Length: 138
Image 1 (spheres, rainbow, N blue to C red):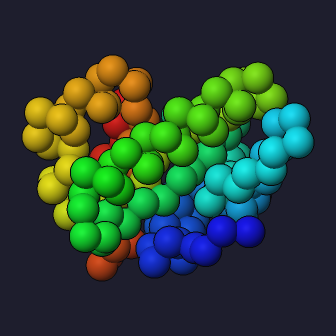
Image 2 (tube, rainbow, N blue to C red):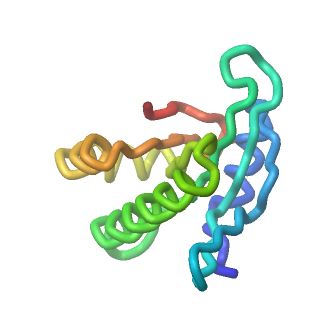
């Protein structure tokens, strides 16, 4: 299994506070002979707006030396996992979770906006200090 992101437990806490139930930590995927692990699987069992929603979440901290390289890796994982989920669990929506700082540094400029739009990127933007979700995109 891959190493956990530095904000793994923070995001778990954040999702639980928002009413999500963590169902998989990590979410195991198999395609052919390949095995992969998405950081989290979660469901929202209560509440009219989110009831019955299932998500898969890949967490990215963007704390490496190059945000561009981190974005390349994050997009690759997101697209690959989303495609596998579309076949195996079409009712589960793939999300990339990033901190407010990472969102502002990476996703508010032209390249970040291109990634969001062209890859139909779903983001969970969270505040790691308060363990609160700031924004769901879309």
